[in-house]
Amino acid sequence: MLDARSENLLFAVSLHQDIYGISYLDISTGTFRVTESNSFSDVLDECRRVEPREILLPQSKENHPRVKGLIDSLDKITITFIEDAYFDTGNARTRLIQQFKTGLSGGVWL
Figure 1 (tube, helix red, strand yellow):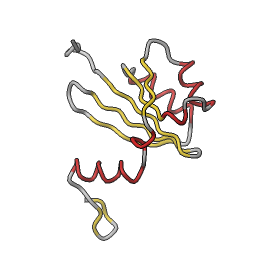
Figure 2 (cartoon, one colour):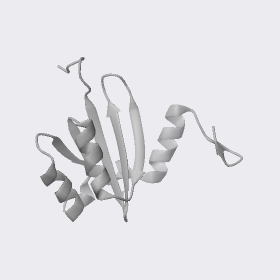
Figure 3 (tube, one colour):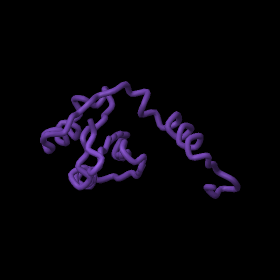
Figure 4 (cartoon, helix red, strand yellow):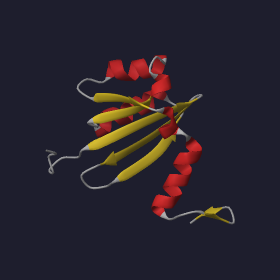
């Protein structure tokens, strides 16, 4: 039921102290992007720019003022709160290294 002529983006935002982790995946093509920012306005701008179909957020941040601001600023985008375990940085790093078959050797990413 997805439109193959347009991107079908799933966007995730993680918040740890004053740093936002941002990732998004085009589930039609498999294109994956990840970055981080310390600016809430940059996160909001990026979300508006890529126009995702759905945003994933950690359950524990459901009442966080910045998350409420994100939700209030975006219309017609599905917001889904999921278990915090999916946003654990240690587990995420391990999964990304395994998925992309990369690692750290002598202080340099391969």
